[in-house]
Amino acid sequence: MAIKVSSQDRTFDEIDKIAESNAKKLLSDKKTEQVLIYSTGCIGCDIIANCTCEFGDKETYLIWTESEKTFIQSIDCCYISLKKEVNLDEVLNFLNLNSKNIFDSKFQSDYMTVHHSFDKISLITNKRTKTVELFNYYFDSENKYSGENNKQKALRFKNLLIKRIKQIKKDNKTD
Image (cartoon, rainbow, N blue to C red):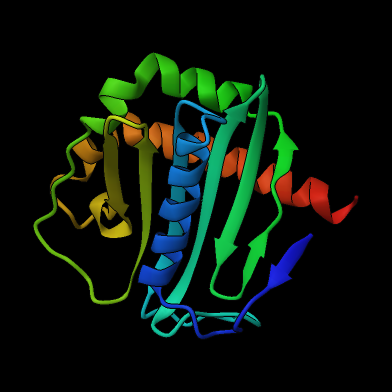
């Protein structure tokens, strides 16, 4: 279930502010020790959807553990979902075992495109925020660094996260 808010008026920055505010509230209320924020979207791409932001599309997911249960909440250009209990044990275990390598991942490119998709992964605690960004052109075969970029732990983590989020979305359509 989602709550519709100011359809198509939200910018990418506003989505980030809402996600960060919600994460900080969870941390300050001592409901969790860390919040994972995953954002994915596209800048300047042709979008076939009922809901888009001003310059493209963006979905953001907050993931946290509270009282030994894992929750997810999504925020996009038009909607903010209610929190939903989910099983993300595989994702969180991978994160806990590989956090340093995920956030130390370094990507290079010898070019950039105007229209591109992006992913951003942030881990927020009361002490600090760690972030890694991935752009689709990092992995384009025309990028001479694509081979090395494809070996980074952040890419593996992103792919695992996307796989589980897609499954959660699929499961919710049948609820």
